[in-house]
Image 1 (cartoon, rainbow, N blue to C red):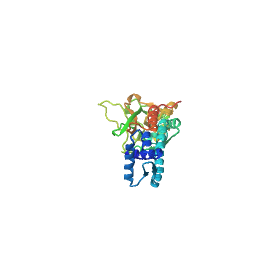
Image 2: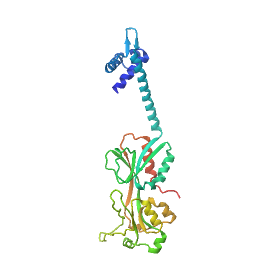
Image 3: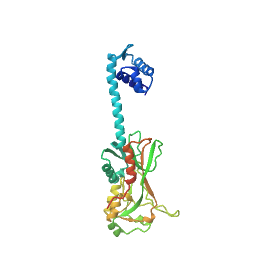
Image 4: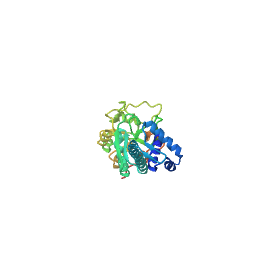
Length: 298
């Protein structure tokens, strides 16, 4: 900032033709302007002005330097204008990391794109724990909560699970009335890509109940294959309700054992902590918090 102040003192002196004229423009004393220019000349090891008792004129080096300084201040002014415009209207590239089930979030993402057409989305789909700041993400959507003090977090809605099967499968194999009935059914499971472990079905059980080891008809690292297999009558799957709204509404999937499911999951939006987040990040966080898990229209 001290260097910019000295450059400004030099430009104002050149424009005014005197230290006194520059001092009037800057609201400081003429001696302060003279000292700032002198320090600038000393640092540059070049004389910028020819000085006499009657006049103050630019040297050849001063004229060359003045042109460069004008360009510098023009760029600063343009940058300030650009930032002020950015704060008025969200725009620019927005890099977002979504979980592998993020394809099921695309209705909300597309609604965001329609609402903010000047924001260019760069979407990354992965279940690994990304480093939001070091990897250059503007925002991340994940289940669970943040343990990084460098991040801000906002809840983007809760969700429950449903155990579902097709009407044809349930008619042929029977509708389970208790968790133990699942032992005779074909069960399709989700596998965590990061660990390879199967996600447990969140079944309510008494402390005296034996732990159920459910049959494994198939394992998949994303939800779409489980939805497809269940819808096609190959067995039961335990899925987040937000992922199967349409199927439940159409009746191609039917939920069972609703009273025996206990969990409620939640998505959170994480982004780098800042006193003044950019308009594009603020717009994304607010929009997705309100719309991410909203049930799609009929």
